[in-house]
Structures are given as C-alpha cells and as structure tokens.
Image 1: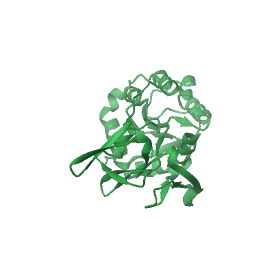
Image 2: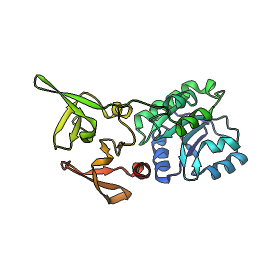
Image 3: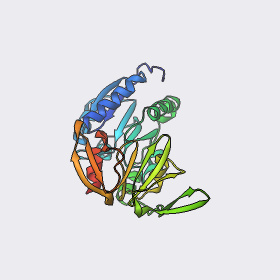
Length: 258
C-alpha cells in the first residue's frame, strides 16, 4: 500500500467517465485522493487557465475532441505526468523520456501502485521535467517501421512445430499458460505471455480485448452487444468460452476495427 501523500494534488484527464471513475477508485485504495477529473481538451485548457496546476496528472492521450497534447500547445503545464494510454506499439520510448511513467489500458492495480511509488520517489526532480510532446506526437502520426513475428513455435513431444501467425485466430491465457488457437481448431501452448505478445503482434491485425484474449481481426465472424456496455465476439472456430471485449476497451476496439 502506498503511504498517504498529504497535500498531493492529483488530476485525471480522461474522456471515458467510467474509466476515470475506475482510476479514481483505484487511487483511493492507494490513499491517493483525486482533486479533479477533466474529460476533454477544451475543458482542460479552460481549467488550467484559471486554476493552480496539480502536482501529478494522469493523462489519457486520445480525448473526445483531440489529442491531449493540444492542451499543452495552449497552456504551459509543469505538473508531473503519468500517461494512461492504449498507444503502446510505437511511443513507449517517448513516454519514458517525457513522463514519470505510463500505464497501458486497461490499467492494472499493481502497475498503478508501482507508478505512484515511482512518482513519490522522483517527486523533487520530476517537477523540473521538460516535456517534449512533439517527440510523442511524431511517433503517433508517423510510427517507425517495426518487424513483427511471422510465426510461433511450440514443442509437441520430441518435435518442434511452427505456427504461422496468419493461421492463429486468437491467443488466450488459461491456468497461467498462454495458448494459440488456430483456424484449424487446434490449441497450442506457447512459451510466452500476453504481455510479451504486445511487442510481437502486428497491431492492425491483433487486438487485446481483455486481460485474457488477443483476437485476430480476420477471425471475427460476428460482433454482438453484450451486458454492461461490452461486446461479445463470435470467432470462426474458437468455441471454448465467451470472447468478450472489456467495457474499458470497447472504444479503442471500435477504432481498431475501422
């Protein structure tokens, strides 16, 4: 548990209000009180222009009316920043250079605690951090070319089997193992984790819909409205369990589909 930081002024900038409230509740468990939540670029510019700036900002990159960097094109902000983002494919290095930390959505409680502890430890020097949002903006608009995995291997008895990525419908975790499910209806145990797959899968083809699943866009047969503002996916051959897009991932999932 993070020790209570008396007098810490914390601001959340997040356009999805349920996600903002979830982050607020998670911070409360760490004895960190959120003083304010903002939900758009225009709202943030107005607020920063008329209020004392906070010690720490949890900043979503993509807001409903534009990239949050537009706030800092208008207002000089010297607060420390922890990014909350789904843009993990290209900009992680820039996030590291220009912030206290970054949290990939959906935010994990343990990772949040680590980020807050890091802020507390770096607080004196973080106040002098020079933020260069242009570096991140360039990476988001003109991402560097990357090589993604074309195949995975798995051991079957004494044999090594190669599985082409384009034959994989989904990756899922179960009983602490990570499996690939193929279009042929077979499941293969892989020596990797879903977190490692984030760096290895082509992001236009594969999307992490929740903590347990990555899905291939070419394997989606149907998308159905589900309870609590979630979506249910019907894949071509995977039938073992329901494949659900988590509520906090639905917006990014819809953007990914387009």
